[in-house]
Amino acid sequence: MAEKITMQPDGTLTVPDEPIIPFIEGDGTGVDIWPASRAVFDAAASKHGKAIAWKEVLAGEKAFNATGSWLPDETVDTFREYLIGIKGPLTTPVGGGIRSLNVALRQILDLYVCLRPVRWFPGVPSPVKHPELVDMVIFRENTEDIYAGLEVEEGTPEAKRMLELLAEFGGKWAEIRPDSGIGIKPISETGSKRLIRAAIHYAVQRGRPSVTLVHKGNIQKFTEGAFMKWGYDLVREEFADVAVGWDDCGGKPGDKILVKDNIADITLQQVLTRPDDFDVIATTNLNGDYLSDALAAQVGGIGIAPGGNINYVTGHGVFEATHGTAPKYAGQDKVNPGSVILSGVMMFEHLGWQDVADDIVRALETTIGEKIVTYDFARLMDGAIEVKTSEFAAAMIDRL
Image 1 (tube, rainbow, N blue to C red):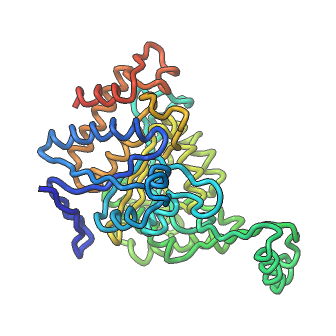
Image 2 (image 1 turned 60 degrees about the horizontal axis):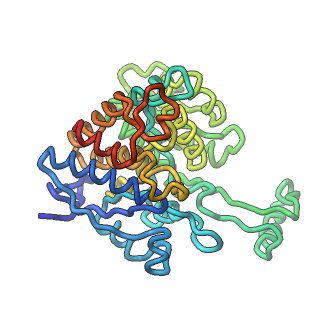
Image 3 (image 1 turned 90 degrees about the horizontal axis):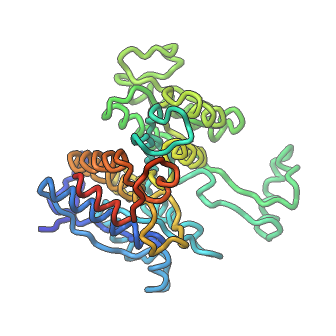
């Protein structure tokens, strides 16, 4: 019998054997990768005596064509009611209104963690010599920073008024060029601490040795620098029994989790030159955007990179493909479904269905290891067997 997932007072999810899970097919190649991924999910769940009652909701171009709205209220209400959902890629509307449907969903549901695990699967083509050293989990703050969308356009009355207000501060504030567009970058103690708290909890639960706070605090002292400071404060206030900051232990944490920090620009270099120095990363919104895509390039690209947007307090989570819609390939049964499939793995792990998640990962590894791959990998591999999207899913199901 299909039932809702519920959240208990202690923050744990109660997941029935047949949970109702809303999904958004996605625009563009969503018509290809979602059915393939769903077939894998259903087969893996069935193997363990479980099933999923899928409930389609609309967003993006499909929603606009059907309802006149890019993000119908019913879709948001359904995700809110059923707690956990999954989605394919969405078209970003052109022109005014919502800038990004993905950002809108995150902000409306307050999904403050963008969770991006990055690891290499043997056989996946990579541009680096040792992709196997990449095994990181990025906790990217999802609601603040420049993604808050607090901008005024150059030459508008709003920009003129903003310049007048800023000029009242004097000094450099009064020297902003009059032909400037202006953006505001909010970074709060509340937003920073709840993100870093989630990252440390994750490290504790998964036995991860370190958490790195990535920031640009050498330049942006009261936003990015404050993010770092609040992170170290949090370690002392709430996690002193299981974690310790670098300065408080001289880099020698003993049996505790080491919390350290790194400047954002050097981090982008070091994840290439010494990736095994990094484990769990907690960072601000823009830095996390850069880092997660840069890291994905080392392990096969965003075509196989999963993502999840989670509020650990309310229990809400929406897992998603991290790539775009690639409309020129839509309906060709061609593209790699790996991003949605691995996002489903994250979803099952979040639900506590670890056996289901592990089986999907093993099937993926086996299929790629036998060089049965979609075109994006086939063109980079010697002796590859190029298959369609649906055929890749079928090969995975055969190996479950």
